Amino acid sequence: MESLFGKNKERRPGGVLVLYTSKHGATQRYAERIAQPLDALVKEAAYAKADEARTYDAIVLGCPVYAGKLKGLDLLADNIQTLKDKRLVIFTCGLYDPAQEDVRANLDGQIRAALGEAADQAKVFHLRGAIRWSSLGLMERMLMKAFLSQIKKKAETERSETERLMLEAEGGALDFSDEADLDAIVRAARGGAEADA
Ligand SMILES: Cc1cc2nc3c(=O)[nH]c(=O)nc-3n(C[C@H](O)[C@H](O)[C@H](O)COP(=O)(O)O)c2cc1C
Image 1 (cartoon, rainbow, N blue to C red):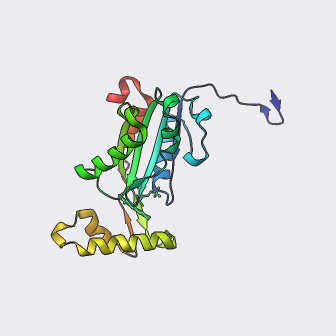
Image 2: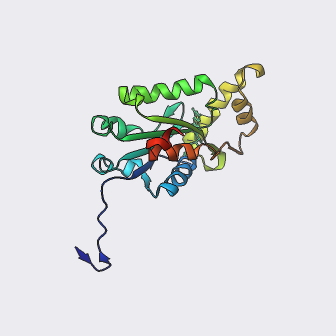
Image 3: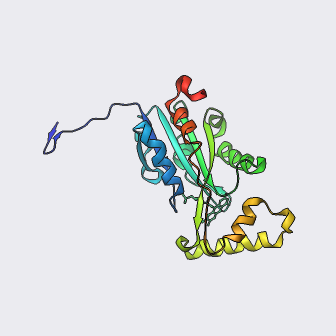
């Protein structure tokens, strides 16, 4: 159909859709960086529809961690029966270090609980985010304060490196963002032999 701006571009089914949830920007920045080499559409998960997601070959979903919980898995979880045969790539974004087994196990467990067996087909990556106290809302500040006071109750030797840095950065900013793993996510979204390279 012709429009005032020339021919309407009908998207052919296929390609990669990158979805994210992000209150403070780190997950969004990762999503945009991943979408670039894939020439993928990137959008907030809250504005995506299952019907739209079904037209893609691969879905990359970025989920931040707030108060121990992964956000933004709903679209996938609610429509997993019709989306499970797509290439599913999930990346999480939190402050805690995913090199720690308990941190990874907790996040993987939440994905398994949300997606069931389909989680086994998904490629999952754990990335680290950032926090800036000046950008937190009132409730978030209260939550962080309560959280930090729990950490302060721990003996210094019991605190993880992340917790030590969080205490040090209280009132300021802490940024663990690292783009080193993004190429692996891009490869996983492309699929084929590249995915395992
Ligand atoms: C209120 C609040 C609670 C948080 N709780 C956790 C947490 O339990 N575990 C964690 O690893 N990171 C936690 N974080 C850090 C966020 O995961 C980090 O800021 C991340 O970058 C959030 O993604 P976004 O920047 O896309 O919003 C919390 C951050 C906020 C603001």
